[in-house]
Image 1 (tube, rainbow, N blue to C red):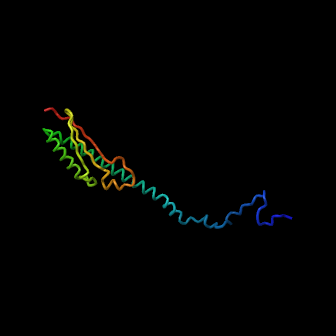
Image 2: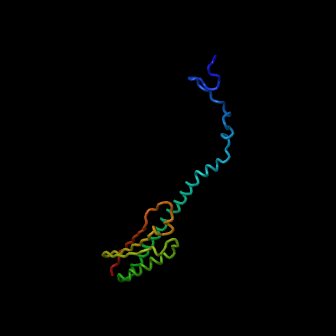
Image 3: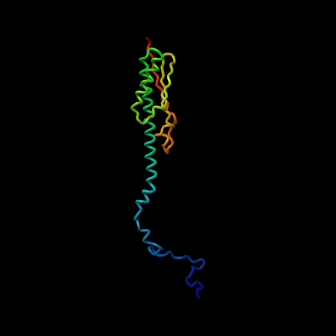
Length: 158
């Protein structure tokens, strides 16, 4: 007589796997309804962060390029000045005029510095992007808090 009456497997005996499709809920394994929603829920946050990163870095690079162009134009405008005071005035006016069209840059966060070393005149334009509303709300860390660009021109002999 077998001591195992079918309720539990005997020690050392392998238990046979149940036939396919007879588990606790075989219809759930074949059900694909909602799979697209689950895939969207997993991939959408990643895609949104990628999009926000592209927009944030694109805006930062556009601001850096705009600041560089303002410095370039200011240095060229300074060439027309005959004295140091006139050069500073022309360069400062050029920077303000260049950045008036940049709607995304706050004019209060822009500073301009001038220097002359021998026959070379330099204009440095800085923009405090760390205090800008556009860049401070970015959930992704951006390169630098202050965007500083310099342009140098050689003054002509008179």
